[in-house]
Amino acid sequence: GENVEQHPSTLSVQEGDSAVIKCTYSDSASNYFPWYKQELGKRPQLIIDIRSNVGEKKDQRIAVTLNKTAKHFSLHITETQPEDSAVYFCAARGFTGGGNKLTFGTGTQLKVEL
Amino acid sequence: GAGVSQSPSNKVTEKGKDVELRCDPISGHTALYWYRQRLGQGLEFLIYFQGNSAPDKSGLPSDRFSAERTGESVSTLTIQRTQQEDSAVYLCASSFGPSGTGELFFGEGSRLTVL
Image (cartoon, rainbow over all chains, first blue to last red):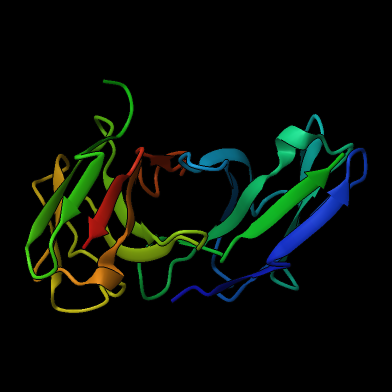
C-alpha cells in the first residue's frame, strides 16, 4: 500500500517568514494530494489539495507543489502569521493494496513566533 | 446535520469494559475512515470502508478492535476489554470516495479515557 513520509516533525519560524513542509509518497499511481490543518483541540480541515495533472497550486499565502517524477510534494506558507500555528498533515491517495484509501503523513507541528 | 457526527463526544470507562463509538457520515459519502489520535500524536489509520467493498482493516491494532458499517450510513467502532493505552481521540471521516473530489470531512471525535 501507499506510504507517506513527512518532514520536519516540528518547525518554528518567525512571524512573516516562510514555512515549507515536505512529503514523499511511494505509490506512483497516486493522483490526489491534500493538506490538512489541525488546530489545537480541533478536527483536521482541508486547506489545499493538488491533483497529479498539475505541478503547482496557490491559494493566497498557501501553495502546494508536486513533483510526480520524484514522488514528492510540498506545502509553502508565505508571510506566516500566529494563526498559522497548528499541526499540518499531508496525504496521498493510492491505488495499490488498499484500494483508493487516503494515507496521511505523520504531521508537522508549526509554531509561528512573534 | 450537514457534517460528520460522532457520539459520544467523551467517554470515560474502566479498564476491561467494552465501548462502542458511533459515526454518522455526511449523506451520500461512500467512503468512511476511522483514525486514532493519541495526545500530541498523528492520525493513526484504523479502518476504511468504501461502498460495498470489503473494508480495509489493516490498521486495527488488535482483535479487541472491530468496526461495522451498515451500507453507506452509520458506522460503529467497538473496543472490547479496553486497556489504558486505548485512551485517545477516535476520529471518523467521510468523503464521496474515489469518484468525487476526495475531500475528507472529519467529525469532532470521541475522546476515550480508560481508567
